[in-house]
Image (cartoon, rainbow, N blue to C red):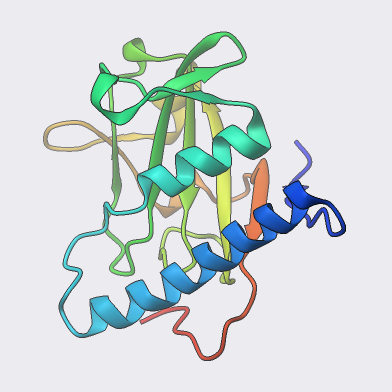
Length: 172
C-alpha cells in the first residue's frame, strides 16, 4: 500500500482551517512532551480524539461520538472500525481488542512512540484487517498486544507531518 501524505490546501478557507488544526496538533504534542517530562501527563491515552478527527478527514472514517461507542469507534468502508493511538515513549506494547468485535483496525503511532519503525515528527497511521490481527499481535495477560515487530516492514497508509513549532523532544 502506498503511503498517503496529508498536504496543505493553501489558498482555500478549508485548507487554512486544516493547516491551523495541524499546527495546533503539533503544538499539542510539544506541550504534551513538556507536561510529561514534568509529571503532569502520566498516561499515554490522551490523543484518541485527535486520531479520530484525522482518520475521518484523511481516510473517510465516520467516527461515533465517544459516549455512544460500544467496543468500536466508527465505520470505515462499511465495516466496524477500531481506532487505537499511542504516543508512549517507554516501549509499552499497545493493547488491542478482540478481532471478533470489529472489521478494521487503525493504529496511529505518535511522534514520541517507541513502536515506530522510524523516528520523525509525524503521526503514522497503520491499517489492519481484523484477520491480520492474529498474525501481527501477541497474546498479552488480558488482551492481544502489538509491539514494534507488528509495524516492521509495514508501510503506513497515512503520514501526517506535524510542522515544527520551535524546540521539541522527539524521543526521551
